[in-house]
Length: 157
Image 1 (tube, rainbow, N blue to C red):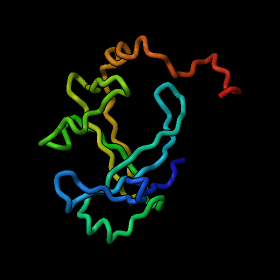
Image 2: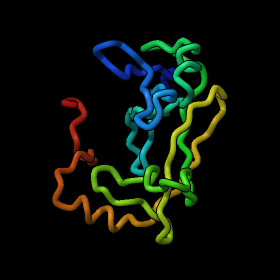
Image 3: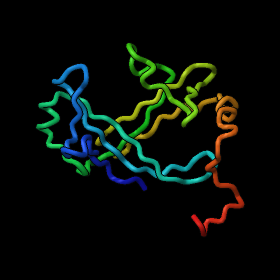
């Protein structure tokens, strides 16, 4: 049901796939993308693009021979946790509820979310279900809804 993992273009002008670190020009990353079919809690299925970064030295990334559109084995998986992945900058990986800007929480603790690429075909997502649903719903109140209800005419979609 999921597409193959593909190497994304970092610079459309040059076609480069390697992004150099802003802090150290010897390091960088390559962005990988995968389109996944997701069934939401409401039972509605949609396509969603997930991405992950492969970090390394510029020389190692170049040696790997990554190119735009290259298909790779394996998949991208999501890992969520109540413990930050980055102790120095924990805000980097906060799980945010859509366009609301609200951090998803469980029992008042923030949830952290990170994506990883793996060559293993059987990697599974690890999801922490948030419990601040009312706060998130309130933030969406007044925003135009894109949800499909039972009366939607699918012939026009």
